[in-house]
Image (cartoon, rainbow, N blue to C red):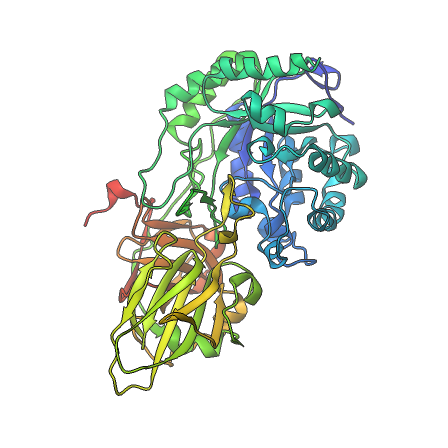
Length: 597
């Protein structure tokens, strides 16, 4: 049985070891890719893999747990072990990671005034209920039990959010209570305020930093912080940012490969590091995060390519070879090999089979709830996706006005089935004039609200805007209107089974488009969305995530795991009044530079 200790250096079996790690998120990558990604990490010259564990995928509904398929963290860790990799796990209830709500489950928001990431007893009770299932599930993987897991994280970048040491201590105590006995660590930005607020150095919890450049300067700050507290621990960057994430409507962020290689070399000469990300993968479904801003927040895109060493689809990049060379220069004894390559196929194009308006099929596929005042997405469904509000207003025989009060995030208003306006957080609350015929007794209004992704970092975790849908109501003239029917839409198998393509078409309304495709064999591919507006694509029941013509990416990665030999059903949900007639595939991601329009 191996041993791992933290002294002045990391000690593996009583011998000093430099940790060369890379981040691979099992929950962002289909299982068939796990082995290739882990092998390529090993071939890079690494000896460790790091991954977060998101609370919201493992307890999707309170008290219901899921560790199957892509969520099988235990199989991922054992596969890493079989390839000779050590493992760092980050099971903290908050992970950031540009992941929806930083990994916190949406169902936490059902409880009013619950203070997240604090000693609020209601929050800590829910944390314990999760930990009492998760931690015994992963504790046999610890090096102390003969497994490959050498360290676990208590909390993530807490110094960029709070300073409540009792919360950190209660979390650490819960981890110990449920079987965690490997060394623990915290990771924070490498500056004094963040380290002071977010670490548990007084409790002998290892302090690590997160940065992606100026290694000597950042490491010096870490070392000085440790020295002030009488510690002489090994220096480690827990997130060495080798690229960056992207947001809708912004240019893709790239980093020069040789610049990264030079920085990695400098960092390895003075300490250990974890490359974040080694393989980024995809924010499948509705799991993309959002950057918090004072006014309108900035949602992140579906692709989590991150400009990492492997592409979103798992292909080695120029960065891979540059960093591989740098590692060899600093650590000439490491084992390295040629990485495994990927085959990505252009499947051609196919014509649409059927289409139907959401407004026509909503009652056959969605459960309706009727209330006096509108309910939020968390109260009517899973808290993810869309919510449709339907209501009838009295026609007073003249132009009248409405406004939607307190709603998040993206609002589309339809009057008698016709689109009137699309509003975002900055505009929601502005008045809308309705021009309706005087001989019409009632005005039918539909409001489709999309949760664009909850914040994953910053000051808004306890902000009302994280409760999605309409929180206030719809004002008609100058009074709050009463009487709503609402439908939550998250594309669950049950909802999709209720789609009625005979109910009626109207491409000017949010619509579903179905494609029936026959394939000789499943392959990795991309779906080209450059002719679409905004929506999601579901392949054989799996939600690949959102597309949006804002860019900077105009495609969705479709791994072979989600395709069948023979018949395949692909459903496109489009909200921007674009009549979709065909679906096109590509053997590469479609970026701004590739879009020819």
